[in-house]
Amino acid sequence: MSNIIKTLDATDCLEGIESVCDIESGRISGKIFYDQKIYEQELEKVFARCWLFVGHDSQIKKTGDYITTTMGEDEVIVIRQKSGGVKVLLNACPHRGNKVCFSESGSTRGFICNYHGWSFNVEGNLTGQHESGIYEDSNFDKSKWGLKEVAKVASYKGLIFATFDPESPSLEEYLGPMTWYLDALFDNQEGGTEFVGGCIRSTYECNWKIAAENFVGDILHAGWTHDSAARAMLGGAVSKVSDFEESYSVNWNGHGYEFALDTVGNVAVLGDSQLNKYLHTIKPSVAERLGDFRSNMIGSVSSCTIFPNFSFLAGQNTVRIWQPRGPNKIELFTWVVVNKSASQDIKDRWRKGAMMTFSPTGVFEMDDGENWEYCTKTAKGKVTAKQDLYIGLGMDSYLEDTDLPGNVYKGQLNEANSRAYYQRWQDLLQSKSWADVPNRNKGKAEVEK
Amino acid sequence: MNSKEQQLTPVSMEMHYKVSGFLNMEYRLLDEERFTEWLALMDEDIHYWMPGIENRRRENLLSEGFYDANHMAFFDDGKLDLSRRVARFSQPSAWAENPATRNVHSLSNVEVFEGESESELLVYSVFQSVRSRGQDEEYVIFGRRRDLLVKNGDSFKIRKRLILMPNATLSCKNINTFL
Ligand code: FES
Ligand SMILES: [Fe+2]
Image (cartoon, rainbow over all chains, first blue to last red; front, top):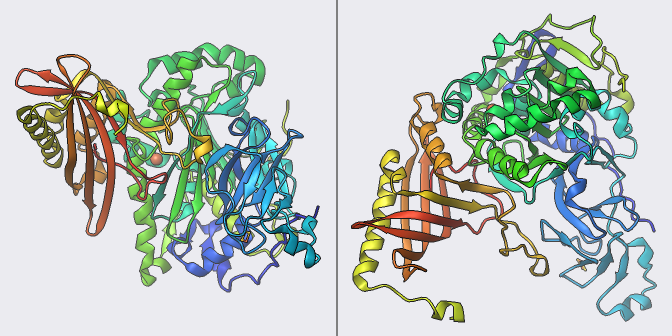
């Protein structure tokens, strides 16, 4: 069957794109948050090329189980195959392009298009049409008209990623040593993780990068922005990040993880002592599994973004995608992740705690939305958008002598990850092919197991 | 009207009047930011629940149709959770609440029935919440509500609230109010 997708031909890079950010001197401009031309380049050079998170294994357990999501603005169906594998299919009928699946999740033996009744099986192959006789008269070759399949699908510890680009590096190469850190949340117990049921979707009038960057390496905002929420949940201020003796910012290929080693700083804001207790209880077994270092990260003050738009917080266990919907709008999809082996009571507590803090009704997230929207909206002013924005904290904090994998920087109050994020973004926008994308990694690529 | 509805017994006109007066007063407290007084209307055992709405096909519905008690929810709160939300509103460092959000809550389609016990009342209604923030932001949320009230002297306490909005995607960034 030839359901393989046609890929985009790379268009020329946008004139002047090399000057919108000058990362080495710690400067970006607001233009990158409010420019339609830049946005169109992003859909092509970022979202149609990079590996994008599309779902978790636990959401589609049995053959025919599916969820729908988007890759950039392209709608896709993520569906479990009989073989046990996963296919990611364009949610658009090859006849006139109508959407074939209108449900956000479910279980099915196939999809039937509402318009002229083309029907597709779980593999996406076209299996029949209304008035099928007339197709035979036209020498119609059914085998050529299935739902289009994205170029590549791969997963890491239950996290399913897909890419539209057959030329993209493997997922393994794309994630690089970040997987070593991902394990602190996604593989800290036997059996791994699962997502709680449902998906909360909301809409922000902000640029997608502002939100992704907030999780890639901006713990600086937490102590200030989230003061009111912390006081409400903890009865006091959030942990003062500058007081931590040891903390890091680590990045690779634009992904970034900033973290302390305090074990429970993040989980504590859920205000549920049972969850702190759970993490303390499993910690020795995590240390056995992943080593002492990462056992300190299971719920510590931290945040992570996998480039371009997949983010999570270990401890709060919120997982999200910032779906681009134009230069100044996103749809936010959020889920809650829990250890499969945890008791139902612990899972329920996480479901509630994550929503109470990081969701559209979350006491923490409410303040973020306001900030991100106005970082975006001010750039509507032509003159304002041209001004420099400072992104230079921690310029000289790179750690040469460390055993930790990735590009490692000292301290989490540091804009090193944000710089690496925007640098990668700019590199992609300046590159017509993967071969042109510079390798800016300087740390250890290998992951010790 | 299904058989379940037929079993419901509407309350007297006087009781209906009292209940709708109580619910209108509750909404006015919210609009006037009198959160502590609002919180006092909640029963100690309050379950304040606004499940996430999932857009699913008819043959793949969840235990409650478009929602499920074990799935993610906007609110799935007891008294402690509600009091924490109220505490956040009252912090001087709730930067985003200054200037304040201006709220108008309204309630219609009120139906009041006798509850399972003498002291309980079952109330169905439709709510509308209009919020304006900053210079020009406006957010409107509509939905249906099912409340379980308990009689409390001359007034009532709210023991259960189920809030159902029709939207599977919230069309704004947050719900910084109660519904
Ligand atoms: S558009 Fe789908 S069958 Fe015609
Ligand atoms: Fe935040």
